[in-house]
Length: 161
Image (cartoon, rainbow, N blue to C red; front, top):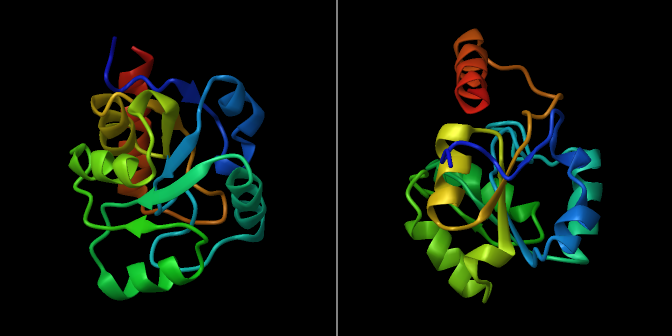
């Protein structure tokens, strides 16, 4: 099994992730990536559609955010608008922080899903930790550098093969 192949794939942003399906599949907790998954990088703001999705998820799952971002001021700003714990400096695809967060949420890896937009960081980290994984496209409200767009396409080609 390819470590970059997600358990679930959505060809749209996080707001289309089917929470009922996750619940039916035994998921009890969701660990979310931050940048491009639930907010545009460096914005520190949650889009209204994402906020609504998070509120629905919060009713059924334990939630946390794990990001590789290291900018302390930005992380503080992001944490202030999130109704869940946020952990920065994760060094994904390392699984060390994921195990710490799972422990704090009192979750076994097999009962949690990591949702993110990058196969080489998010999906690989979740798979290495024994979690289910969900690949989403970046939020449609943001614009990315051409190089980042190219790398995303390349990553997706790798997981298709």
